[in-house]
Amino acid sequence: MNHFEYRNGEMFAEGVPVKRIAKEVGTPAYVYSLATLKRHFQVFDRAFSAVPHIVCFSVKANSNIALLRAFAKEGGGFDIVSGGELFRALRAGADPKKIVFSGVGKKKDEIEYALKSGILMFNVESEDEMVTLNEIAGGIGKKAPISLRINPDVDPQTHPYISTGMKKAKFGVDIKRSLENYKKAVSMPNLEVVGVDCHIGSQLTSLSPFVDALARVREYLDRVLVGSLKREGVKIRYLDLGGGLGISYKDEMPPHPEEYARAIIQGLEGLDVTLILEPGRVIVGNAGILITEVQYIKETDEKKFVIVDGGMNDLIRPALYGSYQAIQPVVEKNSEKIVADVVGPICESGDFFAKDREIARPRRGDLLAVMSAGAYGFTMASNYNSHPKPPEVLVDGDQYYVIRTRETMDDLIRGETIPAALE
Ligand code: LLP
Image 1 (cartoon, protein in one colour):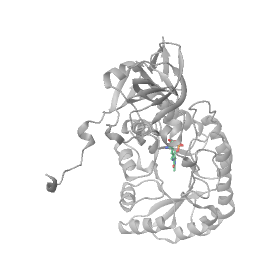
Image 2 (image 1 turned 90 degrees about the horizontal axis):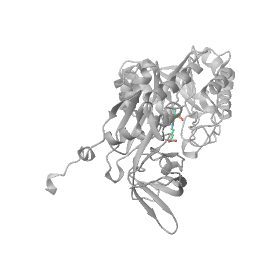
Image 3 (image 1 turned 60 degrees about the horizontal axis):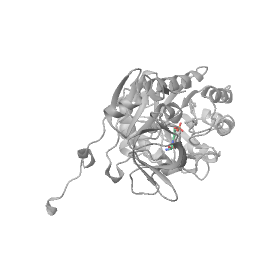
């Protein structure tokens, strides 16, 4: 459920006409609905109320500090993958004790920053990382709380770029070698083993890969880890299941968070752990749109092109994954349909939002809304072709706030200098 709806043929974001936002802040622009964000967070959180848990919103999906603040106020924690995301979360008022740090390539300065900030745990992805973590923690007189990210070798049946839990992926440690890895961690004086972690992929639309991954981790926990680690005086207190629950971009029918929660809670039965979840897309995906203005219409013998002012620099998902984003008129005008490619201004044939899409025939100056753009939209935006990044707008009832201004030309060259030798 989201709060982008038509009233008398005009799209509203909650109580605000999208056309008004476009007129006042310009296009392209991201628009988020606070009511939708909060509702998605609450539904997800409540679904797990039967077990001790922390919902750690995955900052990579949308890292604007206003959104992060909204989740922190709902009691959420954060899943981060860089020092930059940690900085954002802390700036937004996050409780460090609800922050988990994932990622295969954590750098020393990022580790030190996280240790000094007192985060809940590091999801460690290799033995090398353990060694580094142990060294840095020792150097500043701290103990680093860790969980090991286990690769359960489960096929999440999603796009290969966003599958992470199969044997050939760079993520996590081989489940078969994890006891060995755990023992190594236990032997390191500045590490404290507190959990186990896995994340198998993103935009999953069925439950079975989650259930299979949990069953594999669980079996391993029961059969091997709990006993062996207990003997070493270690207790697994956190089980982090990552993120990955999909959303409907077109006609996918992903499980409802309650269904997902039921299956997971069932798989946890008898285990005395705090569950950690790292949802991103399911919370913000359908809570945001990208509004863009039609610049030109071009017709060739072969095709029709609707050329808009947003491009792969603003929203790269269609170009990168061939993914589907629905495109709707901001004001419904005519019912004549055309089949066209909706493309941006970038000088690449891969710069498109839709291919051979049936849409209501737009005219120059019309506004289009690229739907389901709240996750992995702005966070993946770039300045390619030297376009300033678009603004982000948060709607709350009949008010809206610009939560990030449009970049300026000066922003484009910030930090660049012409050396004296070239003057
Ligand atoms: N936890 C970890 C360790 C992750 O790597 C990810 C996503 C998440 C949680 C959140 O997953 P979600 O709940 O959002 O599915 N750019 C791609 C998606 C990349 C996902 C990367 N990892 C896209 O636009 O589809």
